[in-house]
Length: 307
Image 1 (cartoon, rainbow, N blue to C red):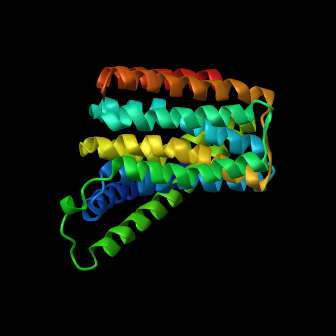
Image 2 (tube, rainbow, N blue to C red):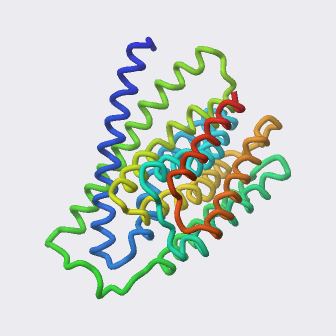
């Protein structure tokens, strides 16, 4: 693929991400009002699953092509990018408030799931049984999120004829646009990276992880601009949980994942940034601009060290 063609595909992909993220945030907020549930619940379920779909497709596809390093790198790198890059960018654009439920329940649950996934990796592999446990844990997490974030149905906005179907359709179109845009960006980025002989694991934790995290980035930035902090934070928390429970679980069910030695620093980095956001959330309720800048600087340092 030529440089000019890669650049063109990259621009088209970015445009699709912007349009898809805008549609997803607007329709998700509308759906939350109609259903009488909080925007956070929609963020950690519908939006998070939609924006995590590229990780799922990319990682399972990599496993099917015997590229387990690429698959694992994508999962780990995406979770790192979600916290440092995406929350950092969102906080830099507009302060992101974290509700008490987010600080005291959702983020600790995300940290606990991260810890469980890391424990599963300790023996150097994630087997099919462990993958099945992760996937089953996803159902429990969704029920927990709905119970924790539900509001009085009487507060729901009056529904218009076909309103729910319209919102669902727009969400579906947004997810499709995000997925296609991400695919275009990842393909163009991989073409450039592989040309200089970068290792698959490094490509997974940086180039592919960045590309598949672009939906979360676009959605979170759009939500931050719209002052919809619940969707911004819920998207990241839900995406990290979905990456570990559904993406890692599905990949391990397809084929047991080995954890190569060079991947461990990235796994430890994922654990470290998760603990960092957990501690910060327990101390302060807002991710402000200075914190966002620190997160972005930390992500830049991580990428440099990875290469």
